[in-house]
Image (tube, rainbow, N blue to C red; front, side, top):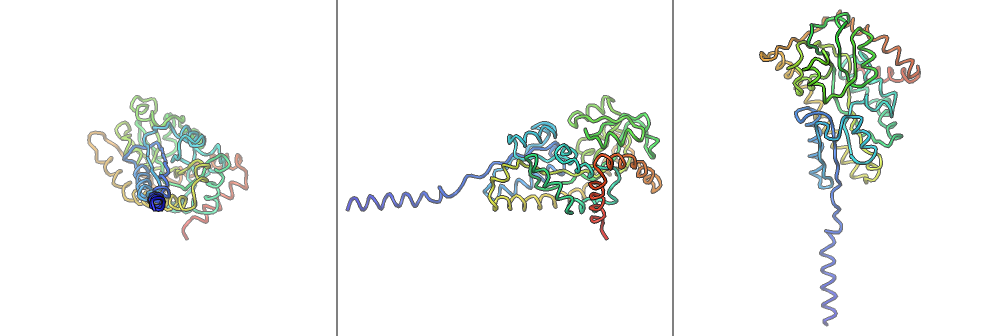
Length: 335
């Protein structure tokens, strides 16, 4: 009798422990990016984390402000498996996928919607898939949006106005080549040093999206902004390939669903906030900030100035690759 009671007792203890044994600990996920907490992409990543954390299957932490170093360093840290995810501009992935450079060619997308749609085409999704050769997995694209020119010297309305201006760009050969080709002196340098370099006149100007200019307070150290819309910048949410492949299908599906929600949220934030941020900078009396709106003829002059850059990258990438991208742009253009 005692032995039977003892057996029942141990069975009950075993059964009681089954839920604890079956419930796996949540997967940790660290995500790093360059923006500050006010930046729309940073808020979208917090939303992404909140959605995944609510499932109980993940413990996601988002690190803003380049805690894991600048973009290239963060990407290498993800490859090494010491960081789970990063969100970096597509131009920082050109060593892994040279053709992805096409996305940041000047004046290649006629509208924002065309750019968004192009990234969803077969060509756009192929660029993400090609990252796997370098040990990365591209979860999807995020948006930075149109880049515009700012400077502390003078209003810029035509390419000729750029002569003599020293500009900071991303360390992106396309950006550097384009601005130098139209008469500026362009140099790639770290984003983390940009505010100080503008304040101390190391650079006369820079080019960025409205949200970055506003949230980083570049309007405090710049006087003029030309609504050039010269480049559309997209980010890639990239993870370590081994990390991704070790997830089960349910976990991968949860990440994909959270990403789609965060991306839609970010696109909405940009559509609603860019105009308000621009208005806020324009009305500032403490830091006068003149916004230059280009006429159609002035805009066309800038578009025409991009042809040498397009020709160079057609030669670098080859006709087949370059034409495949242009075909994707046509496919992405709303009918």
